[in-house]
Image 1 (cartoon, helix red, strand yellow):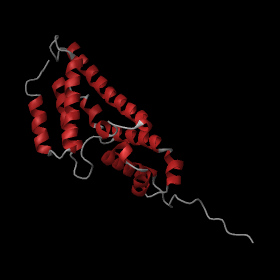
Image 2: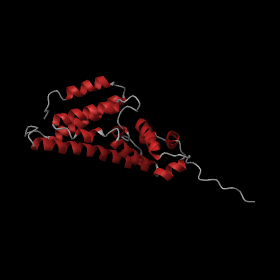
Image 3: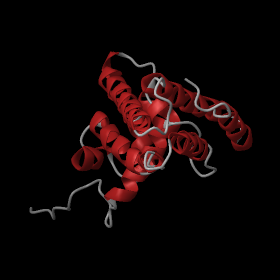
Image 4: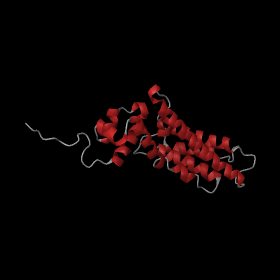
Amino acid sequence: METKQNGPVGRPRGFDADEALERAMLVFWEHGYEGASTACLTNAMGISTTSMYAAFGNKEKLFRKVLERYTEGPSGYLPRALEEPTALGVATAILAGTVRTTTRPAHPHGCLGVQGALTVSDSGREVRDLLVAWRDNGYSCVRERFQRAVDDGDLPPQTDPGLLARYVTTFAYGIAVQAASGVGRDELQELADAALRNWPLF
């Protein structure tokens, strides 16, 4: 007796990969890499585990795609900040962007790139290293921008662009941690303003 074969199981009609990736980003952002279970991810994305693997690969590959989306979306303030005409403008825009992004009402508080995989088991080491490289890249971009500011005379010649970039990025990451702990936007912005009050710092 011949039975009727059904189509692929798991991926719903009208599957929107972009929307699914957005939902996965929010799960990773809120729970971190290891805290985001496959069940939690697939429930949020509205697809089966089979469909998730077919569309995005395994959990690590999904996280890599999510980080790309996060870099271009919520964290997109960084490349815009680097285009500010002065080093002070760059630093101000970075900290203001961090405050806005880490305290948005409709999104998890904190930063996916900072808190996504600080402490992981052996299976999460590649993701931890990925985020270390992501943060280092951000620092390098800021350092290069501050070096240009020194070369152009916007910053004093004795300024250490590496130290200044490390200060700004470390302060930004601290804002993210405080935001995840529940510190409000207004207070964080006051802290950001105070951090740059005696510019240039080094």
